Length: 411
Image (cartoon, rainbow, N blue to C red; front, side, top):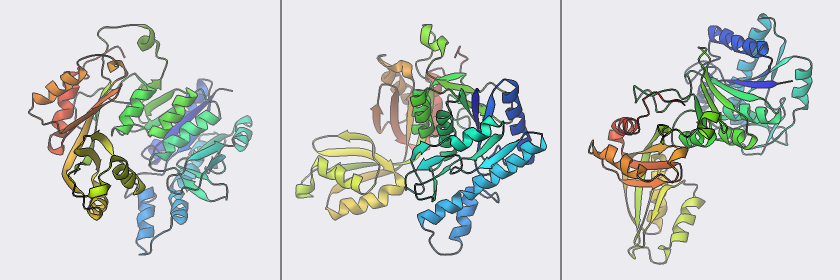
């Protein structure tokens, strides 16, 4: 039996009209010879009655802090509501189905409430329903630990659920349905001529997610990569082709096209602070690279774009962590300075590996608009520039235009 996992986001299950569209997608899968396994997110977004954020705010309104175990129990409710309503919608259209929690679907996690890691998936219960042609509708975002406590997988965890279930069932593919047409070359709210890509490599979309593009959860991509399961990003509200995330697009793998784009996409992430720590003798024995970075890591502060010089260390952090970092540095009498309101703009593309002049071209694009580059970092598939957040929209458009991502390509 060919299994197709279909994951639907919160906006896709938010109204009865859209839930009927989900049934249409399920029926299409059945007509094409696949057995669908459905994964759903919580209904709606913040402010909607059953959205996860709404449930969290209800608990906070009591005025007593909710411990992590109970918070996970609460946050799991939204997906349970979605799954039951979706099952009723499927049954109304004549499709036998069953609602399953993450636990009932066999998703076993560790004890890290709020951001649990999946340890394994026991598919026996799922297989029993599939063998009886009963369509499982599984709650995304959640699992259960060895003690039987409900756990959640962190923000975007429903995408992870879809990939994990797809891997465990050896599915033909995993379809991620949302409210966009597919993976785009840039944020369309910033770049008017951003385009949907027909295909993109796992690594490229993983980098896009890591560097700020709200496409798919990076962990979901990791699971698909290790299992080599094709991912499809599609729009619930249309029949568009969407974007195939894969490692085996024949057009890109076997045909060398000199006109093919070196850069795949541009991504951006804001609310960064640039920090420069000076080693000028003010902190004495604490002015040691390993001590500084160990101390920061111990306090769970994540660093990015790290540059190490003999007399200073430069890096960026999420602005929300700046207060904590200042307290740490002040406690050791370290000298430092920082700049708020920064954004990291990143160009992404597997084909830039070993190609000279890409950095120069990116710098030239920003220089045309007198955008100051505060810091850079690069890898085989990415080049990032730190800039003042005031110019982020201009920078993204400049790079998108410079690398001709708005023009129709054969991808």
